[in-house]
Length: 78
Image (cartoon, rainbow, N blue to C red; front, top):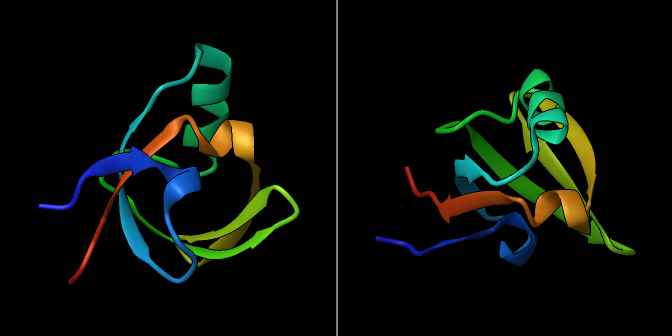
């Protein structure tokens, strides 16, 4: 079983599954409204100048490193 790591440590091109979000209620609500929910699959598409571009449910999102460090993921292989 793959280790659980912060999203910022996931390499480009890897599929992962959201395990938990360790954030305050305001950020947690914002991320959940965007679709960042436990057991959801996502992919890190690019890491650019301290931001991550991730694909989630058919949409691309740009996340800063601080926000992405609060999202705990596990590598996923179908």
